[in-house]
Amino acid sequence: MLNRLSASIDFQSQALLLRSERQRVLASNIANADTPGYQARDFDFKAALGAATAATGSSQLGDPIAPKAGAVADPGAAASVTPTLRYATPGQTNLDGNTVDMDRERASFADNALRYEATLKFINSSLRTLQDAMKSHTQA
Image (cartoon, rainbow, N blue to C red; front, side):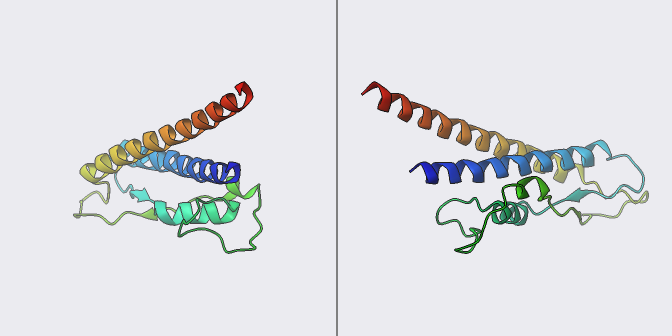
């Protein structure tokens, strides 16, 4: 039970770190919306999360991006996994070469912020559940 909860929290913490990094990238795009020649950036969250969880060996049971059986986790790998930034495909051409689409960036920023909050609430709930379980065991 504890291993499953720990794996779940590790998985969610990796997701939280990547959501935070994506928020930083999207904020940078929005901040540079009027910068001539600025190329909007983003990364594939699913692929980055898969790489992060495979590198640390943490994933939820039944998760399709779980590491192969017998894989040895490197505890220091979490800090070394960084998402691969890609250039966003511009929806329309711009004379100054800027590829930031403010509608897309705002929608992505809001979606990512909502998912960040949900992940944070999940982690808090899991830790609260664990704390309650420990309290009930010691009081019995």
